[in-house]
Length: 198
Image (cartoon, rainbow, N blue to C red):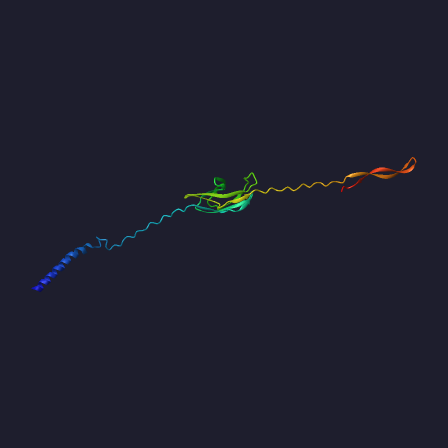
């Protein structure tokens, strides 16, 4: 009788386990669950390219050079993301004189003839300035230091040669023979003789 109870008890335990597990197994199905589905791949958005800021840098003349009015200078610079520029020169803070305001974005040099802006003969300290523009903003650069522009040297006048003195004629008496009333005799007559001056 004891063995029969044990057997019956085991059957009850198995039935309870079956009752608890079977509903859970039925709930897991291919049609009603995402258990066996692979997760969807999420595409990362492509990073948006940040617009590069415009850049310009004067390369020559960049300070310390010496020129003279009338010289032809090739102004040179490097740049990036530039559409157009204004080119000028400055004597220092608060001074700016435009050379050309139609520089294109493709240009990296400019031939500049230094015209005389001075009324005196003193040298000038000058910097080149380049103001550039683009769709993303603007960029400005100057020569790192001043360069010197000297006035055109004044030609020295050579002395005018003086005409040499011409020898002057001096009259001196010269004896000559001529017949006189009382006979032949000598008389003094004048003649011209060139005597150079010492």
